[in-house]
Image 1: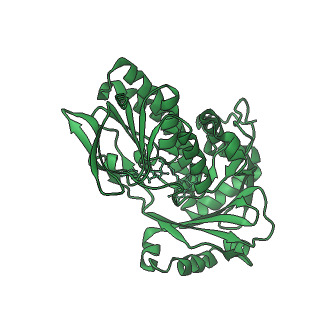
Image 2: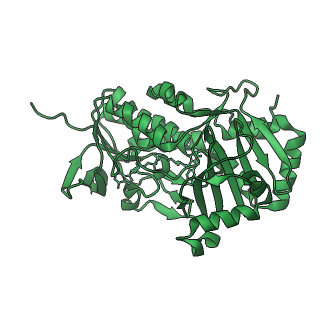
Image 3: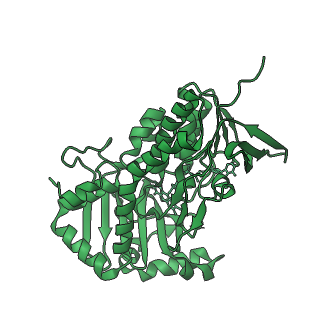
Amino acid sequence: MTARATDVIVVGAGPAGAATAILLAEHGLAVQLLDRARFPRPKVCGEYLSPEAPRVLDRLGVLKRVDGLATPLAGMRITAPDGTVVIGTYRAVGDWRPYREHAMAIERALLDEALVERVRALPIDFREQVRVSDVLVEHGQVVGVEAVDRAGRVERLLAPLVIGADGRASVVAQRLGLRRGSRFKRMALVTYVSGLDGWSDYGEVFVDPPDYAIINPIAADRGNLSMVVPLAHAAPWSGRLEAFLTARAKHLPHLARRLAGARMVAPVSAMGPLAYEVDAPRVGGVLLVGDATGFFDPFTGEGIYAALRGAELAVETAVRALRKGDCSRQALAAYDRARRLAFGGKARVTRALQFVITRRGLANLTARVLALRPGLLDVLLGVVGDFVPPRALLTGRVR
Ligand SMILES: Cc1cc2nc3c(=O)[nH]c(=O)nc-3n(C[C@H](O)[C@H](O)[C@H](O)COP(=O)(O)OP(=O)(O)OC[C@H]3O[C@@H](n4cnc5c(N)ncnc54)[C@H](O)[C@@H]3O)c2cc1C
């Protein structure tokens, strides 16, 4: 019996790659999914899932499992630098309804494992501990990858389409010369805390420029604490991250008050610089999805949803191109257009919010305006939660 030729090689089995592989396999395509790690693998993350993410998880056949593992989040409680508190809830806004009227908090190890379990249940050639080391390009077209297995064996794997879902350190993006740095130089510190007074089903955000922190209640008496600070402030503390986070948290008075009596129950993980940009591929035979396409800042928690939605869009283009037998750059260009349509508006809102939360006076003023117009905060949360189109903020269509 001859082996079936691979239609698509997907590099990386995080949310972007697993979702891409599942959807491609459901279209009957022969998929090879490669990840350098063995699952479950660690991933630094705030562990918030937008209320629209369940729609894609449902389509992928994992929502029931995720529901059993996640904590529902009714909304967000945001504390401004001057102590003004605004509370927004995930709810229908006009005609726009979230797939679920709540967001979710879930440990990444559990979410990613749920997706990988679904991968394993499908006829996908899933290979863990296989690291892609290079991208094979012939006559302006990607034709496959070079991969190294756990024993150090190097293999050339060929397919008409390669999808780079290999995250922030994407080898696919780097080898094609697409990755650029960003002028935003910030760093995230992430740990778990226990012993907080009065857990609720709201995520808690503390804005105190130049920092912000988020507490995300992922389980009974366990919260994900993520703090984002300027990279230059954290760099001298490498190797002493617990001490840095403890000292830094004391400088944010509202966060310090909230954390009084709580204790860190896990080592601190750090990630920085957070932001980088990635150009669209200039050759055919390749698509990028998830963090491999770039990343800005986790404040609006858009990463996992963007990875899942990006997978849907990539698969639409991939299936069409493979059916036509044309994976040229032109044939794949529809994906880039679809991404701009899906994510462009929210990216602009995210950047505007970043401008606000890095300026003390503006952050206080915004919080006071939102306190007077709680409906507007719900619209903003709907935009951040991916179920209200960003134009709703401009048209003032608020009910
Ligand atoms: C501090 C921080 C907090 C965040 N908080 C949130 C949040 O609360 N909510 C949210 O939605 N998003 C958040 N994000 C973003 C989110 O974590 C990412 O957007 C999401 O993980 C992207 O999924 P992905 O599949 O693209 O990448 P990843 O999850 O990084 O998966 C990439 C996979 O590729 C594999 N890989 C890498 N290189 C290779 C190679 N050469 N060969 C083979 N395999 C390879 C890796 O092992 C990995 O499994 C946060 C990000 C940061 C940095």
